[in-house]
Image (cartoon, one colour):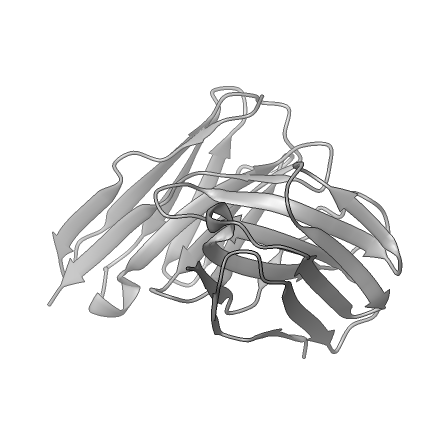
Length: 116
Length: 111
């Protein structure tokens, strides 16, 4: 069966520090991968998605970037964190080889990021 | 721009009630609609996915319906239990990878 792992579960970082959140998927090949942010009082917002190694699409301009160095690894990064980057970050995967998968998305347990 | 609304934002009911959770969306040109459950501090668990050509999907005590033309979906929970307490989110997918989510409905089922 497929599993998705995110780490760390919680993170407290000072403003201006770098960030690296990692997500890995097991039990499937060539998944579509997604990074979402869930801020208090707001819905989930899609940040990035990837349909293959090295292929990243950005949904919103921001202080963050994403990379997919391996088929089942998705990394969310920042060079300098802002207070507004605080939130709950969720990674998800779905089956699909095209940009549109029409398959359910499966989420990790998330990373709670607090910026001080 | 697609917008998804879930009303009410919270619901508290006694155990055993049959529940209807509502979701509405503004653009009927969707490929699918998904219902998720989120427990506090956790990620989302996929409950049901209804493709645009379908009218409903069932899984155990859960039944989701879709009326694309009116921009509505309902999630029906039969014989609610305290373990059903969670936030329920619906999301629609149009012609891209982007899922547009509602803000969710927090359900509390009291024993």
